[in-house]
Structures are given as C-alpha cells and as structure tokens.
Amino acid sequence: MSWDSYIDNLIAQSKDANGTVHVDKASIIGIDGGAKWTTDAHPNALKLNPDESANIANAFKSKDFTGFMAGGISIKGEKYQFLREEDGKVVYGKKKDIGAVTLQASKTAVVIAHCPEGCQQGNANKAVAVIAEYLESIGM
Image (cartoon, rainbow, N blue to C red):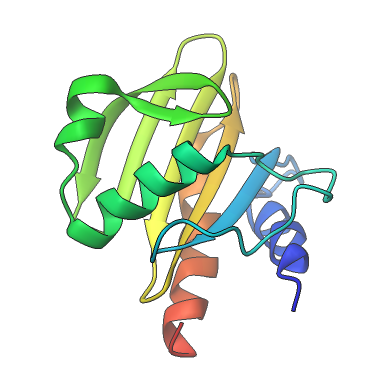
C-alpha cells in the first residue's frame, strides 16, 4: 500500500484562508525502525536517508529527545535547531534560511513536514496534526 496520497492531503491541509500553502515537503515513517511509509517517488516527498529515519523513529518510540536537543534534528542532510517537544508526541525544529520542520507521532508512525522559510509553521503544525490524529483514530 502506498501512503503517498497522504502527502498531498497534508499539503492541502496547510493552506491558509488565502489559499497559500505552508508545507512543501512531507513524509511518513514507521515508529518501529523508521521504515518509510511514503515513497521518495512523490514529487513532494521529504527524502530522509535511513539513518535520519531511524534516529527520528527511535527518539519518538523512546520519547527521549535529548539527541535532538544536543545535536539538532537531521532531515535531508540539514540540521534543524530543536525548538521544543510537546507531550512526547510533537517536535518542532527550525533552520535559518531553510525553514522549519514539524514531526508528530501517532501509535505506529511519525508524520513529518517541512515548512519553507517565510511560510507560517503554525499552518504546518495544524496540517501534521490532522494527519497524525487521523492515523491515531484508525489505530495506526
């Protein structure tokens, strides 16, 4: 099963009242080991390397974000400054001139979105929450 349509849905959910999209790339990985649910073939895929996926999945599975606090959040070869985490389920990061990332866990997955510099991370946060909470509601 391909989860790529969830990328399109997440991006659509990030639109503001004016129709501006605030997410340009997204991905969903499994919380057990970081296996990709979405494919890199999607034009808006956030292409994580296996080490990045595994580090993210392990942090969310253990709810231990000290690695992010100390060394940042690595996504697509970029290190985002860790901003904060909420309830062991949501993590926010930022990198000047690159943008921001929002990561949110469901029971079995981590939904990740990139918000380009100049866009509103709040809209990205809402979009990620919609997808993560939907996955949670269907037991995933």
